Amino acid sequence: MTSERIPWDQYFMAQSVLLSLRSTCTRLEVGATVVRDKRIIAGGYNGSVSGDVHCIDDGCYVVDGHCVRTIHAEMNAILQCAKFGIPTEGAEIYVTHFPCLQCTKMILQAGIKKIHYLKDYRNDEYAMALIKQVGATVDQVTLSKKYFAELQLGEEEIASVEEAPQTDQ
Image (cartoon, rainbow, N blue to C red; front, side, top):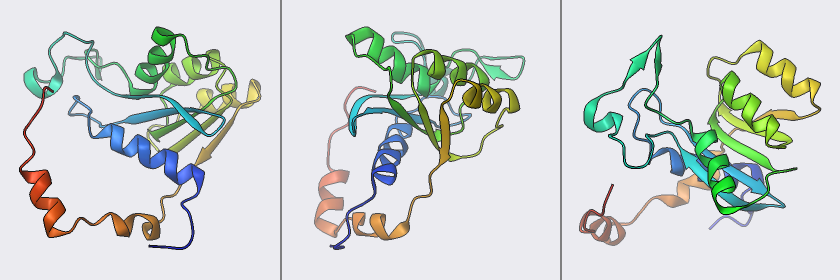
């Protein structure tokens, strides 16, 4: 085990990467984690409205180059806060991909003051201008391999993972 603890930004971004594995849209797997006071308050991934069919089952529903079936990860995370009455004012969000313009506007309107992202993805100039205008900040996170190398599972752990029964999707 490394004697150095994983930095907070990499820890929370790793949570977003893990959430992205639940994505049901085949076009882009995105995860988002909302954090306040170094505590995770919500998480989301891109997928369909609860109860609707998923892109992985019926294909993407594309209109004007966008999958309209999918709710973006950032929106799902912020809606989770709304659903459970969790304030987002002053929070931070960690997203696997730079947020689209609509998600950026929603993030800022929710009072989130810092956006952390892992990968560039169609970074919008107006989104960047809005972030600056409202006094929020944006930060690209780099994940260091040294913190994740130890996640290699041994044969015993792999066997127990492979034998685990599938649960509802």
